[in-house]
Image (cartoon, rainbow, N blue to C red; front, top):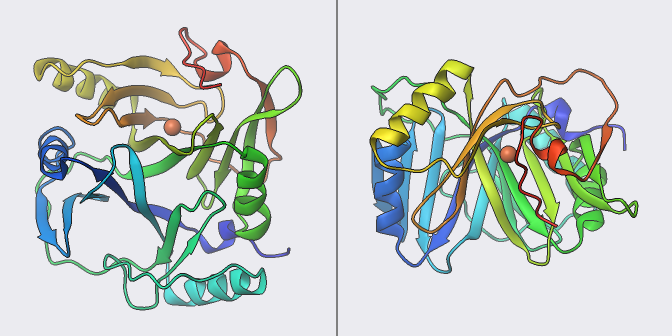
Length: 280
Ligand SMILES: [Fe+2]
């Protein structure tokens, strides 16, 4: 394949999570992720801050309802759609209300619904300017080779790093659809699901501000501060009331034309500074 998703420059725009208690989650994200806009529409609870949007739907805990990637303009979106149709990817009959009409949705090998579209214009003016855009989604899968093949060869995401078990099998893959190290990643696991989602806060100072903010609000940092090997980003993780993992990242590597690197599956790859949480 000559074209790839990278050339079209897709950013992660929103994720929608299922929860038995959407209202409790929405309140958590409103307060602690500084979401200023909240609306109930079409059985969805929508929370939005500047460059970050998360949606909650009644359902099963820790389950992805769908995710949306947005690109720079309609021309790129149309070209990308042609590309994936030529790769025999089925377009789902699913209306993503967060995107303009030209959007479309596919399912990946684990039946995750992934939409591609153009963000709807909003007149809402966000007062809180803390820079914390939604940046990547990390999933878990039973068949990571299939996941990697689909996102890389069929959708055209670029592989930036791979983590390899001692027996040579793939443990984790990182792929991107823009200039950042990864916009989607996946861990091999015994279950299909969401591992975490991440907000990019840019600087170490902002990580420190968040640590103090969470401490004042009695929210425990469950992992970090640390620095990942792949992506070289600083990180902290907290949990929401459904125990979804939320990452705040800074200094994520910006990629050029480099080839992917392979890392050993060990604690230090997950955290160059100390304790690693191995998923498999
Ligand atoms: Fe992450």
